[in-house]
Length: 195
Image (cartoon, rainbow, N blue to C red; front, side):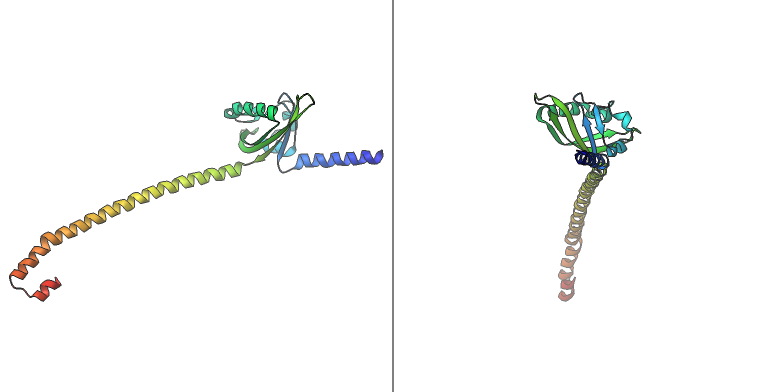
């Protein structure tokens, strides 16, 4: 009996260590949507203490206002289907700073199908989102520069054609008539052809 107790105690200790120190945030919601447990990683992400969140905060209290309606849809979905996957949210930290996260969650139901709790994990994707946004901006700037370059090349082609037309016109209007005159006056054919 004592060996079993020690094994359970050790298992509980290992689970608690994993839960609290995993490289991603974990939380558990009760059926009313209140957070009933949260790991240290997620607490550190948010900047709150355990006591400021557990039993007091809902997910909707931690996300930006624009996403609250979307969360209500996701809460209904997890209650109906038992899971939600790869949902992007922006969390508001205690200090007001925002972090982008990817949420995955599953639900646990009793025999009658009533929600017992949900288990969720979040991964901080802020750097990824920032890099994605920077990439979009760079792509847009590159597209704008490509358009501008195409316009410059087009304008150069127009100018080149104008110069060519001017040269052709000058040759036809100024040089050719003078060459004809030189031929008529008996100038050396060799020099006229050279010109």
